[in-house]
Length: 382
Ligand code: SAH
Ligand code: SF4
Image 1 (spheres, rainbow, N blue to C red):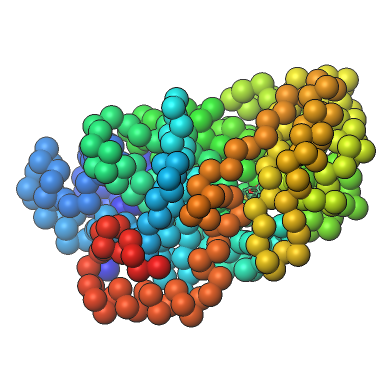
Image 2 (tube, rainbow, N blue to C red):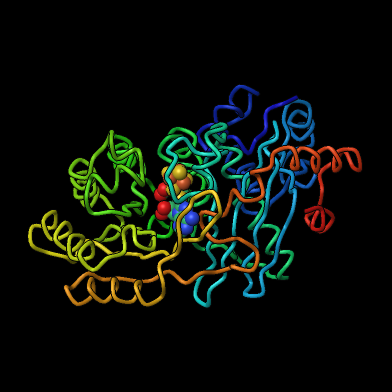
C-alpha cells in the first residue's frame, strides 16, 4: 500500500515529491490535479511526464472514502455516510442556499466530550480521523456535486466543522485539512467561510488563532457553569470564565469582528427567559459593556430517544430569541434543514449507532464489489 496523497497538505506533498527526487513545484501540479480537478488517476495528469506518473503509480494512490449511502432531501440537502473502516462510519452534509453551498464535515468517529443532547456524544469516542479522511469529505462532495449538478465551477463555498467529533481534540489533523481548504492551489476557501465549531477546548482555541485563524463557533448552550457542566462535561475542565476569555482573545485574530455562539434549545432545561437574561449579562460582561462582538445562533434541538430531552417549543424559542434581540444581541434561529433525511446536526451519528448493522452493510458491499462504489450504487443500501 502506497501513500494516500489525500493525506498531505501542500507542504507534505512537497516533502513527498522531494523524497521521490522530484522538484517541489511538481507538488503544486499534483495538488491542483487532486483538489481542483478531482483526479484520482495519475494517468489523467497529462502535464506530468509519463516517467513521473509511473513513479507515482508505484508508490502512491489517491484513495477516496467509500460511500455507504447517500440521502437526498426534498430541500436539496444531501447527506453521505462514509465507511472509515473498523465498523465506523462518518457523515458529511451538503446544504445548498441561494448565495452559497455549505458542507458540514466530521473530524472524529464518535466524540469523547459526551454532551447530553448530542447523539454522537452518546456513542462515545472511536478514533480521530486523519487529515486525508477529513479532506476526503470535501474532495468527494465537491467533485460529486460538480458532476451531479452538471456545473463546472466551484460548488462548495463554505465549510463548517459541525459534523461528528470535536475538531479541537484532533488538532494536528484538522489543521492540516484546514490548510488544504484555504490554499489557493487547494480549494481556495476564504478564512471567513471556513468555520471550526468547538465545545470549548480553550488551549486549542488559542493555537488555532495563531496557526490558522478561521471563523470560530463556540457551542455554549448555557450561561452558567452548573448548567453547562451538566450539558457539556468539558465545562468542568474549562469553565465559562476561561472559555469566554479565550473567545475574547480569539477576536483579535478572527476573520470577522464577532464570534458565533451556538445554543441548542432544550425544553425546560436551558430555554427560560431568565437564562436569556443571564446570557445577555454574560456577553455584556466579556464585551466590556458591548454586545456587538457576538452572535447567538439558537439551534432547535434534534431529539433522539436516548437523550431523554425535548426540543423547545417554537414559542419558547421565540421568547428567548426576542429577549436576546431586545437587549441588543444579534440572534438567529437556525432553520432546520434536511429534516426528512435526519441530516440535521446532532443526528449525524444516527445511522452508525447500530454498528453490527453497519458492518453487515459494509460486508455486503465488499462482497458485491471490491472496488470503490459510486454513490448511486450504494444509495439504496441503507
Ligand atoms: N464538537 C463540536 C462540533 C460538532 S457539534 C461542537 O460541539 O461544537 C456541532 C453543533 O451541533 C454543536 O453546536 C452542537 O452543540 C450541536 N448539536 C449536537 N447535537 C445536537 C442536537 N441533538 N440537536 C441540535 N444541535 C445539536
Ligand atoms: Fe462532541 Fe460536539 Fe457532540 Fe459535544 S456536541 S458530544 S463536543 S460532537
